[in-house]
Image (cartoon, rainbow, N blue to C red; front, side, top):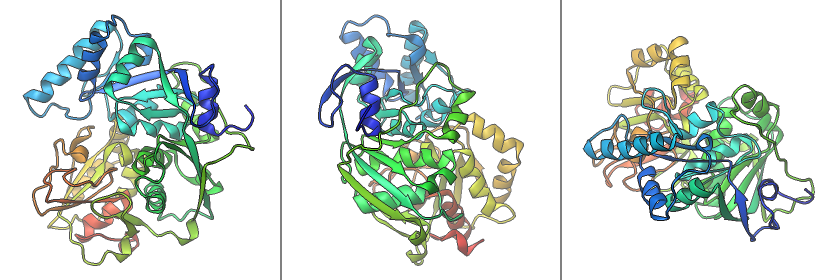
Length: 419
């Protein structure tokens, strides 16, 4: 596939149409899923279009993860709609206690694989790009059509190549890297583009960190965030894959619509201040910004490396008396590993509350809603007005090291302050 970016190459492998940037292509879909919020409207439209059976039950899924365990009658009713439909169709479904946050759980279970096209009725489906899949969010109606047909249409995105130069400091993680990119591009700077990440330092970045970066491509307006699948990725999927797959690589002669370079040697741990992910500045420059709550979790930073980084600072220390620290592992694989390694005890002894895998407060759902006038440092992906509760509250985005340091000191803090 000569001259293709990674997005173009994946689409070309799934379509008979010319996969040039800007073209509309009909593509085969490898996997399609919804959650407890987006499944009910997809199910309704599935019926309205006259569909009777999903195209392949082993490639269609519903995951209850947003308002679960159900917080009220309304959320219980919408979860029941998804549960009943999944059972009727024989499609993939995991109940509370066996599921996790969709964008962490599906890769663990081997349902998102290199070279695939994956659709999810959730904007952070782009997390799958960390594994070399063209994974992207769609509306519930488009998802219903994909469930019925096994195909969809895509406009081939232009690609912004992002090169990271230099060595990766132990104080930097995927969140610092992607926030730095968003700070450069702005929240619309990569609108409907694929972000394609490159740089020798990325080989030293744990897969968890790459998932964080791909997850937040959409916060720059991106259609996808893509990593070239390397040995780390292939080793991860080897024992997990539920079906065959064919990794796809960009060509050395690919043409990029935009290119930016990030010098890792000049980066410090960063945060994104209210009320946009592009409001990025070094954590050490935030002065005395007191915080009321810290949230470590979500599909962005609720994985094992994130928990380990937080524990590395919190173990043997105490959460500040003014701060509530809420930790939510993104899956039971992460939860159980944290339990076995003593991380959960270390967190609770520090004064944190550790909850069952769920999206929880990330979208203002439950398990940590903010009151008017409160400020939260959160490892989630969005800090829009009212995102985690009252429209008069504030959310500051950060990685787990900054979040843990802030929980200890009671203010936005650089982790090196408590090393």
